[in-house]
Length: 218
Image 1 (cartoon, rainbow, N blue to C red):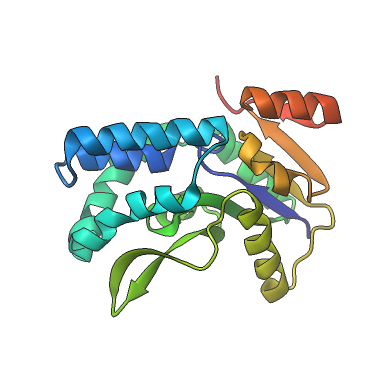
Image 2 (tube, rainbow, N blue to C red; image 1 turned 60 degrees about the vertical axis):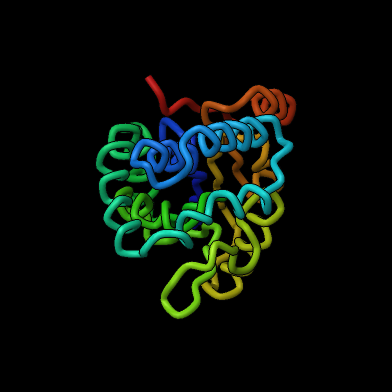
């Protein structure tokens, strides 16, 4: 049974759930609108350009979980999934997941976006295993900090290795689908790396290395 690994944002989704969650919070008035929107855009630009300070971003992104009641945030998350995520869950991505499921592969999403946002998205895709950046909790409340290693760049490899050690899985016959050059460390570890609607840097790398290039969009 091979491992089929998927990035989430701009791979299975036709957009970035982390960025969209930030926009959603602005619209709902949960954060300082102008400032938060500017910072959200700046961090997203840094991510695309490969210059993101992940710890600075996470201090920014996880603060609303600390500053508002958990029940309120979970209620808003339900609205967010319905309004912003369900419309960008790509049909071809669903078909790809189902093809791997039919082959008996183990399905796993690995994403830098925090688990508060991404756990219900993975469930909606029917993917049973998720490695995501984990918000720290204390006494049932979020602290605004990160628990453990963020699942970003080399952190994805570290978190996957930890998961493999616990699950008993290995990378024999493994595939990894991603759109981003930020995922090169993990793409280089699997047997079958696939660039999905890749950014220019990843496209160039995939072409140079002879990797498969796939589009899940119309």
